[in-house]
Amino acid sequence: MAWHRPTVSVTSDINVTPLVDVMLVLLIIFMVITPLMGHSVPVKLAQAVNPVMLPDADKDDAVIVAISHDGHQYLGNDMMSTDEITSKVRDLISNRLDKIVYVKADAIAHFQAVAAVVDAFREAGVENIAIETEMIDRQNLPPAAAGGQ
Image (cartoon, rainbow, N blue to C red; front, top):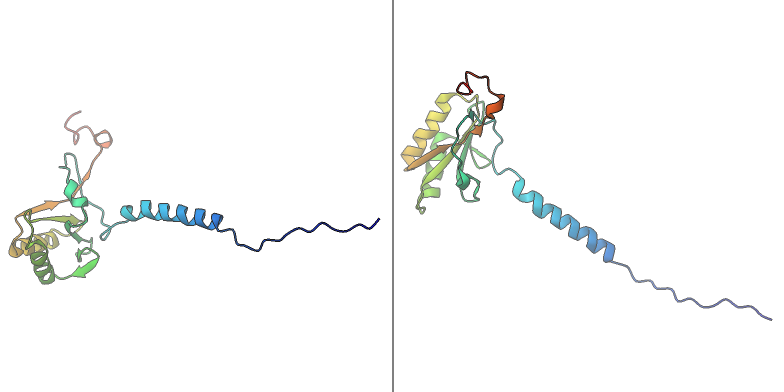
């Protein structure tokens, strides 16, 4: 009796299902991570016990000027001089109703740099200036600083 091999058809199609799965996972990861990425220069904010929450500072169209510890001024990620900030801020707030600008000054930035930026905002016609701070945890404060608690 002659033995012969059964014929098995070979498929040469590429299975793209694992590729699609990996791409969808990467898409979801990037969609979650992208909003968390900083929109401006990182600074170590001054700390305050009773800060006022500024939810509008997190909006995409918020005008935020950062002042680094060495006195450099940034509008978004672009380093600018005080004169450039005045003209840019004037353009950014010209069509707005709220005319508020946020300052993110480093805790060890010189007051002169912060005052110069505030003067530039006033010259640009800014009506409200908000200085961002971090909240201090009252439990970590010494009793005299925590109000005797």
